[in-house]
Structure formats: structure tokens, C-alpha cells
Length: 437
Image (cartoon, rainbow, N blue to C red):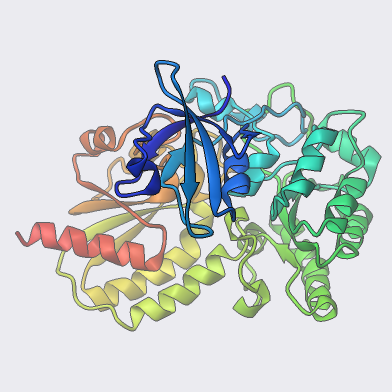
């Protein structure tokens, strides 16, 4: 179906004044047919005079002439494009390691440059067609988030499990020439794309700075469900310590050379190694924070600021759920928060039963894992759960356990909080107010 279906129209907007309604389809802007939300944004970005072609649900076609101030919003909301499917067969792909019985969308692999631009999703560009590359350049879709993994073409084909893919370095060079800003990542597989291969990758990406603005190196994740998949070596504590000793000095050297932070090691390396994090200034403006880079240092900085303004909340007991890898720094913060607030706060590190004990991050904890971890525990007056454990906007865990179901299982109120120090404090205050009613 052509055009974009309008999901909603803002009250008092230009579109509402012209009787455009939800359910209509916007077919074209100034004669340009629309493929997706990006086209709409591109063709309406700066023009003061617009001609909209609208199709009503009964098939009636409208042409609407609009005069507006440059950049004035029309008041239309559309759905994000359905993602293009990934055709790679990456040897470390997390989706291939999922157990059976989860929600169907969790098994969908997307590989869509549009979602890289719109949402910051990482893409490999392995399936990028010439027309799509031309569109990125023409519409200046920047920044993009690109999974490189290795610049060595043969090694990259092995890592992505696909032959005949375009050489990534040539693609990045073309994007750099068009002044497309790129943030890149390397999923580190010990014995494959580390050592000399990682040195080559980092050197060749650094040569494309400032178009390539950052590189994040993140360790692969291995679940307990890798049947009939290639054997891979996990990143353990010894490996993490050695890796940091080699690569953190190189990250600092690149920062001095490029005059900005460029190479980032994921927080997980430091947590596994039990080593202190770099100074927070080494993270710049946190360009890779959604990739697990700098979350812990930022959390610790925000915690320090928060604790200066914490006031007594009440005298009750609360349990706070966290992942195993987060337990150390979370325990320190909660002890300080307990002292300031007067609440007895108990951290609970939940072992991952769904994916296996090697998966230790908070964001992959399932509802039934929490129930199992709480068996025999004195939860107290409420259970605090960080929002990263739930699907955004739906209130369900990865195993489809809903919040109300978890509450029934444990017999205690569950409060979801924003995964920040301030979010945790706010949740405690909310619990305290309910208890004092």
C-alpha cells in the first residue's frame, strides 16, 4: 500500500484545521511519493509551501495547499516503518541463542538502515543495496550506527556468516566522503576478531575520523542455548583484565591524538575484571551509552549528586532487584541511600535461569527468574524492579510474565522505577507515601 497511514493528528495543528484525520493516508508531498517516515521528514523539513496528497478511507483523494513558517509542524503522527529482516547468520547472534517459548517478536532480526537513523539501531550494511546507499547520501541520514566487527573482509564474512557481502571499509569511506556521521561497534569474539585483527579494525576506523565518531568494543553474549551453533570462547575475568590492560591505554592515546574520546570499552569488561572505571571525562558526551558504555560511571556520578539531597522517607523494608554483574556498585549506592532515607533496602541479585548464568546483565532478567530468586526471602513492604527488565510500554518481562502476575506470585506490591539513582529514590518515596496513608 502506498503512502503513510496517519496514526493521529495533534489538536489545534495545521492538519486538524484542514480536516485531516487519523486513518487518512498521506500519499505525496510536493509531488514526491512517500515511502516511509523518513521521506515525510525530508520533504517537509524546510519548505514553507506544501502540497499534500491525501487519500481518505473511502478512497476519496484530496489535494491540500499549505503555507506555513519554515519548520512549523503539521501535526501528523505516523508509525515507524516495519523493519527489514536481517539476512546475516552471525556466529555470535543473540537471537539464535534464545530459548523456545518467548514472545515471537523477540525472534525477529532486523537489519534496516532507516531504523539506524531513526532509533539508533545497529546495522551491518551487509544487505545494503546501491539505491539505499544513494538515498542515505541524498537525504543525509546522519548519524548512523554500524556494526563493523572487523574490517578484514574475509574475517567479517566469517563473523557475519555470509559470503559476497560488500567490503565494509569501502562503504564507510563512501559515507565519510558524504559527511555522514557514524558510530560503530565491534562485538568481540576472543580468538577471532581481537589481537591483531582488532588493531587493524581500530586503526582503519580511526583513519575515517571525524566521520567515524566512535567505536564501542562489547563482549559477545553466550547463553545456555547454543545447540548446533559454532563454539565460541566467552570473555571471563582473566581475559577482561588483560584486555583492559592493553586497550584502555590505546583508548587514551587515541583520545589525545583525535582530541576527543573515540574508542570505548563496554562497562561489562570492567565489571568482569573487577577493575575501576576510567574517569567520567573519558566518556565524552556518552555517544555509546545505549550500547552499555558509560552506564555505570554515569550512574555513580548521578548517585553522588542524588545522595546530597536525599531526605528521610520512612521506616520500612524494600527489596531492589538487580542483575548479578550490577550487584557491586548497586549495593554501595543502596547502602548509602538506606542510611540517608531511613529505609532498610536489600539488594537482590537475580541469577539468570532463562538464558543461563553466564548472562548477568539486568536487562535480560525474566519474571520467573525474579520469583525463583525471592523464594524464602523477606521482601518487605515492596519490591522495586528497574524498567530495563520490562518491555517498554507493555509492562511484561521477556518470558511474558506481567507485573500483576509477578505481584500475585510474590504477594507483595511491585514498583517499576526508572533505572537511575533518582528513579530508585522516587520509587522508595512512592512506596513510603502508600504505607503512610
